Length: 212
Image (cartoon, rainbow, N blue to C red):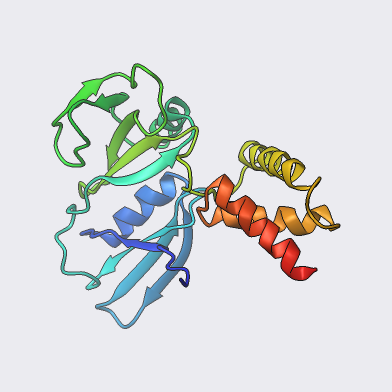
């Protein structure tokens, strides 16, 4: 199946310049500022390290300003992210976790403090923009199988390279003669696209064998 990449999320706002100041103040990159006369404007910004951007503007959407609730921002260190955002002017809640299921609006099910078992995907914090659009910070230190990786930092790329090395080491003794880069490239692309380690290893083996 062809890739279907989610790259832009629309955020309804009432004041474009105020929203621009807020999000740029958080350190989000201004990608583009589109205008068409006096009555239409759209602005795109991207959070640090994110493959997905936000888009807001004037006469751009009929959605009520502030109606975008519970959009996720994944972080690898919730405490550090909270501190950075608060330092940039965001009113970020204390860490919390959920009992009885996730709720992206209101405070239902929220329990103060990080998840007691420290599991990925289970510790949260929240902040809002000036219109009341809310953002949920979700801490993810270890991803679920098949979720893939993107926007590598040194730590995550190192982990993926070690994982790739391990699986290649299991394949190499029985596979045809090949350069390690052929297998590595196919495996790492598969993982980035969300394939499980086992399926990515099968893809890499098929790639090597097809080239031979």
